[in-house]
Length: 178
Image (cartoon, rainbow, N blue to C red):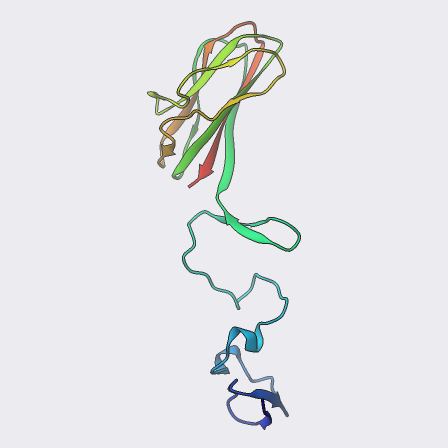
């Protein structure tokens, strides 16, 4: 490649050496530039040099390691801790956006054989079969979910089907967005 002294509008057909005042040159002034012409270097990913297309709404940028990243769905958990445990349903959340159910889990304090579930909009069980919490202070979970797709304004109830001898129960439902 040829090295040139350039005083006009810069192009990147050849290697260019700028002389004089270069403070007025903007990114938009570059023509015939490739990514290797001016971006083959380590630099921060956030900033005006980067744009994106084809992304999925609500995905976020996740650091997978010290030098790698990927786009991921957001995972979140909604739950309730119930004291003075009785059977029945308790409304705990209304979804502000579309999401999907991934798992239901539960734990009981000082008890055995409590049976739990959750339901969507007061009618549809989250799990295909109720989840039994056999021992105290142990987390139990099930990914056998049904009706996994939720819309904005759907609401979640946690359910105590059978109390057993628990003095306190925690029920959590894990979601992904969207």
